[in-house]
Length: 151
Image 1 (tube, rainbow, N blue to C red):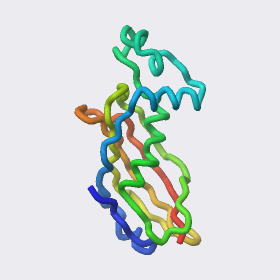
Image 2 (image 1 turned 180 degrees about the vertical axis):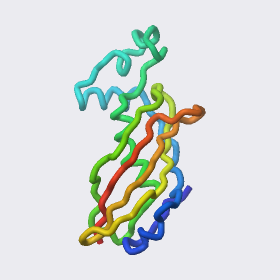
Image 3 (image 1 turned 30 degrees about the vertical axis):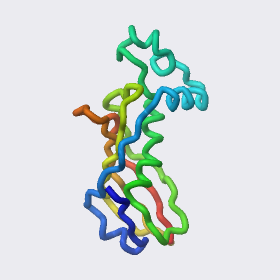
Image 4 (image 1 turned 60 degrees about the vertical axis):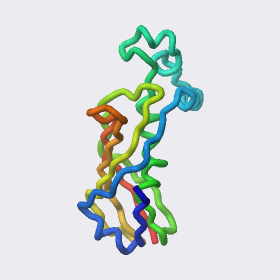
């Protein structure tokens, strides 16, 4: 699906609309290992494929926070605000890790614009997002994200 491109002034018209889905992104063992090195979280369920075979998931899985961090690059495939001077993360109202992401699986983001509120110089947007796992019924992460977009 192509990126939806809008102007800052058009953001209120997106309230309540499903914005679409990103492309699929493979979560490789290398990506998991790199995240483990960056964060210092080397728990075997993430970085030791041999030991993880006998663990609760039968394979290595992505860190929940790695999966959550993929929101940013996948979100950029869904919405572009062409005349925004600044686009910043403001926070998260809710995050739920509902299914593990096995190494080698692919995820994508599906997003809906729940609310758009005017703030000085721009808008605060509330996005409901689901990180889906290809071939699985349950999503990996359910996210309520808040960002600020300034003209």
